Each structure stands twice: as structure tokens, then as C-alpha cells.
Length: 190
Image (cartoon, rainbow, N blue to C red):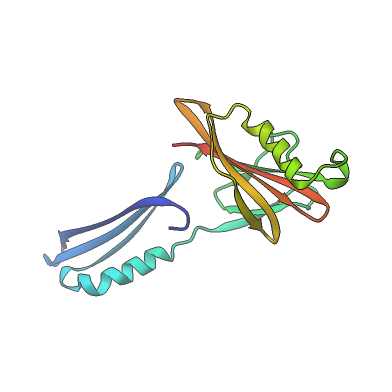
């Protein structure tokens, strides 16, 4: 739900005050060290009536997002409100954000097409960037075509780090009118 993993639990119990049999519907969703509990309780005899209602309500769950922008105002992205702008992740990044407790981060690197080497196409730019990022990868996934805010591009998942604490990355490149953009997201693979 809302891009989060979790559990749906359904149970039966006795209501303390009324001694009536009740059913309990609960969804637990997880994001790093944060979690959400969504709970519905009704009489057991009304389970068939309320279970679809509770499920619909749970599926409507959405975290709050906010837009963050780079210092020059040219780059922005929508991130969960639990994330903050961060400094020091990558000195060349135009935009850096994350949630340190969940160990989840994103950087955006933009380069004017005019500053790229002569003859650089989007495909060549993408391959050079990916080669730099994935040189020491433990594994590399399949390239997918993407579109973000009308910009065409590709994304590639890969894993890096030590075998006992691998990191999962997604590297995306987008072609703008005057610039190439890289978006790099990562978190602990667990």
C-alpha cells in the first residue's frame, strides 16, 4: 500500500465491555524504522459487511509528501515528509535528500548538454554514468524505460556493498531539453 510492504491481519476476540465476539482487522506497513498501524474493529456477526469497507479504507492510505528543491531552484522532487535535505552525500549533487534512520537516500546530478564532451548522445552519457556507478556492483538488473515529468529516460537497479550488508540502488538517467540528469536512490537491501 502506497509503495510500502507490510502485513494484513484478521483476528477474532471478545470485547471487554460487552463480552460480544468481535473481529479485528489490522494492516501494519513498514518504512525503515517507521511503521503505520491501521485498525478496524466490528462485531463478528458483521464481518462480511465491514471487512470490504476496512480493506478499502486501508488501501486509501497515503503518506504525506513534500517538494524539495535544489539551491539554484532548477531541480526539485517530491519526497516523503520524513525525508530531509542533506549535505555531504555527494559534493557534485544538485539535490541531496534522505532519511538517515531508514538509511534511504537520493541524489540528483544534472549536467548541461553544452558542458558534455563533443559528440555525447544521451545513450553514451547514460552508459558512461552507469559504468561509473556499477563498476563494483555485486549484481546488476535489467534496464527499463521510464518517463518522469515528461522527460524520457531509463533506470537500472543494482546492488553494491559487502555481501553481509548489501545496498540496493536504482540509477536513472533523464534527458531534458538542455541538460542530462541522473537520479540515484539507495537503501539497505534489507
